[in-house]
Length: 374
Image 1 (cartoon, one colour):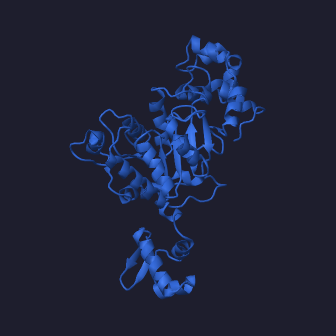
Image 2 (cartoon, one colour; image 1 turned 90 degrees about the vertical axis):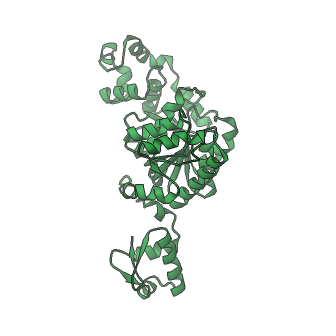
Image 3 (tube, one colour; image 1 turned 90 degrees about the horizontal axis):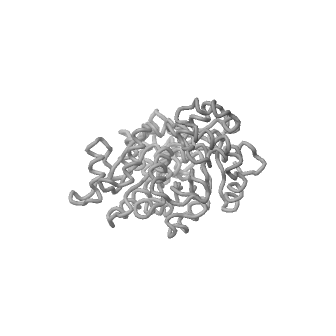
């Protein structure tokens, strides 16, 4: 949804979300009680105080929100930075984020979400990571991107940046969720990385006002968005008190899958991952471990009625030839000769393509050179 000064619903929502003390949970409670931001701002102090968590001071701030805040300035700042305002409930709002207990009422987005981003996987870890962690994060992110997943992370130094870079190098999509406003990228050395992501390769996202600076308390709150955008979260390296563990905990609360990459037994950087594995997180060595766990979940993803179908992750990465051949297979065994006749491909093309699909676990070989769709 393009920010528009004439759009009163956006202006009212901004007036509400810019009010100090109106966080995600309070904002959701107010909108559920009154229906719209305009109705919240028009409510009496007594009506506002009927909502749990709203005391006299906050009720008074909400009553004066239109005069105390400056929605038009925020809209102008977003427009100047090329950011889009996406309110909850609008067509551009990520469906997976709608499901969490405390979804942002408003997202600031540079770039764009796509239907295939519903098949997202978060890859997070420590800022103070090891070369092993960087290497593993890039390798996993690239493999996930080639398989069709959108890789989500927080643009932080260390593992997060490696995850974004791995996805980009593989030609995939990636989403960066910031803990500060979009007017300035933090950390500043990742400004080029953020620009590459927003330029047709994914989206840079925040729920914070445009000029909000990075504050320690905003990053744990940001982490619920990272996990909320995804089917699962992979932690690559995390010390016992690493902030990335909060993303894993949010994932558990949101009924997302949690994965962890093991490291050397004497590495402090991997101690948090080992604890997650002991607590039941799925151990990850390759992308196959993720696909085995998420396969059923991925197949259940459904887009809105007016959007194109969301395919299985591996199917998103298929060539036209692979997709054509796969379309000729079902639960009934088919021989190579039949597939040659159906597709018009040569025998060598069919055999080579079947081998690739078999490696991608999308085709199963049966005795007698028969094949079925996996």
